[in-house]
Amino acid sequence: MTIEIIKNQISKSALSDIAKNQFGDFVKAAVDVEKEIMAIGGELHADCEAVLLEEGSRQENVWGINLYVEKGENEWIEFNSMINVRPSRGNKSRGVEDEGVREKIRGVVKKIVSA
Image: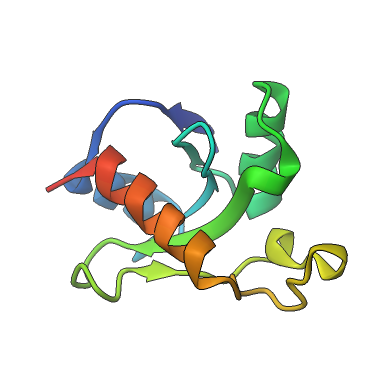
């Protein structure tokens, strides 16, 4: 699976095509909330995270999500990834516990993914 860093925009239909070739109804992604970019297309969130880290992202700014391309705007982002487990930073689950960070992630996804 090819991992692609999305810096500008990608259409939801392009994400849908990627999803069909991977997991069927969703795409795994890692989002850098500081650089406002995301990597998509990995088998694991850690694969996407690794590509962002190679490009200069800082791990504390990278979060794993799933994008369910057929769901509505308020429910298509799932905050669930092993890369999100960071007990030393107060995030003890696979989810993103800080609402402020979740809002940043939503903002990046909204900026990058077009209808």
